[in-house]
Amino acid sequence: MHTDHQPFPAARFIKEIGRGVKGARSMTREDAALLYGAMLEGRVSDLELGAILLAMRIKGESVEELAGFMDAAERSFAPLPSPPGEFAPVLIPSYNGARKLANLTPLLALLLAREGVPVLVHGVRSDPGRVTTAEILFEMGLAEAGSSADLQDAFAARRPAFMPIETLAPALAHQLSLRRILGVRNSTHTLVKILQPFEGPAMRLVSYTHPEYLETLGEYFTTAAPGARGDAFLMRGTEGETVANPHRAPQIDWFHAGTRTVLVERDAPTDALAEVPGARDAAATAAWIGAALRGEAPVPRPILVQVAECVRAARALRA
Image 1 (cartoon, rainbow, N blue to C red):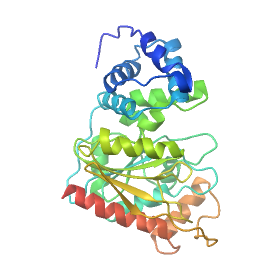
Image 2: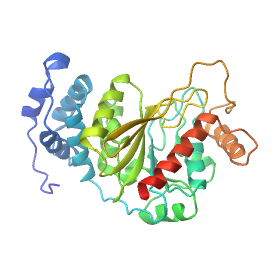
Image 3: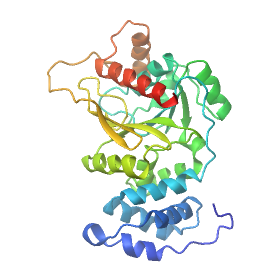
């Protein structure tokens, strides 16, 4: 990464990506890495930065651009040491929270950790109008991790670790914060969902909301990131979270060594609903998750299936 903070002229990039949906052209992986690296270093002016973020929002990221952005993103922070043991670590990004259904991402994380899987949840602490995973974990008495040592302590104690993006990757956190200024998400919101911060291979749980990202991310995992950084599960998000919908299991695609496999088939439509928390606030959700962990409330079947497949894949990846 550059350290001289020399201003980065971005006009030639904006000229290509800023021509609208039909006229814009995608950058090469190398150019995307060059541009995004300068953005992370703060070497792009505010005027040009706003133009880039909105142009990419309208155009959409190509696979090569995602790969280039990720190349730069991974150079912007120190990697985390891989934990020892029989399981590769599982990464659960949590950047959406819940508005309608209770957020059961903490339940998924806790069930995996109980099986001995090292689980790192990374994301935002709060989001106006939503209930975040961080808020629920706090209600359950789980403090956030502020260092690699905190992560290792949590893994050794079979607890999931939550690390806010501000701690994990500060430069990426700044790019996320620009949503409050521009009013819309930007490419970094996609990057953090596919981030792999460990030195060794890890299992990423990745969700998508818009159908076009199913194909883009599928191609990314098979061509641009075919296995050197580990495996990935890709599924439609539950309100943007990477936990299986408790009422109807989503299809889960598994990406391993450049090969895509349908691991879990989508449930057929049904009127039957799983038992879930009656309220979605952090305290009520935390209490219900605690009851589920004690066997006093039934864990929804789609989440149990997701846990079993994660355990199997994390073991196989480490082996």
